[in-house]
Length: 69
Image (cartoon, rainbow, N blue to C red; front, side, top):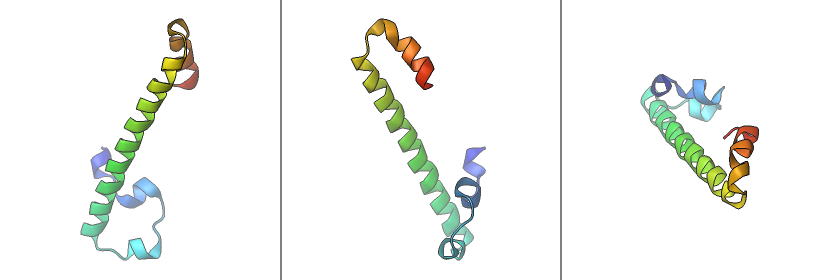
């Protein structure tokens, strides 16, 4: 489950300064990274949908499929 992933599992090898943080602080940072990624994904989905408003309605399903939305 995503909520149980450690920071290093999310972002890869940690820089020495981040690795030196306590486990509690690393978990807090991991939670912040998860939240930021969720917000980023939501923003990208919204922008993708908003951009399709400029495409004629009949072409939208084809464009969504081609772009992967």
